[in-house]
Image (cartoon, rainbow, N blue to C red; front, side, top):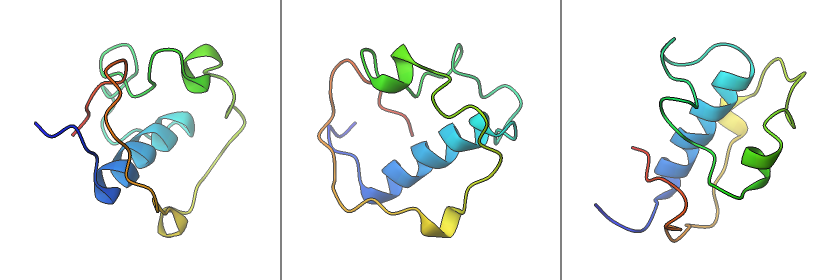
Length: 78
């Protein structure tokens, strides 16, 4: 498995995370306790309710201009 995320990987993780937040996960079993998306020590982990109240997102407006290098504290999700 590569240590580098592609922009497609980044959009996929963001789409999954936001879908969970608004209550429409890709799969009903796709929950943080089973499939971690928030990196340990990140703002999303320390304040998981930071996006509460969000009701929708526009998938076509997601972009990922920077490719991230894998942080060992953060799971690789594909």
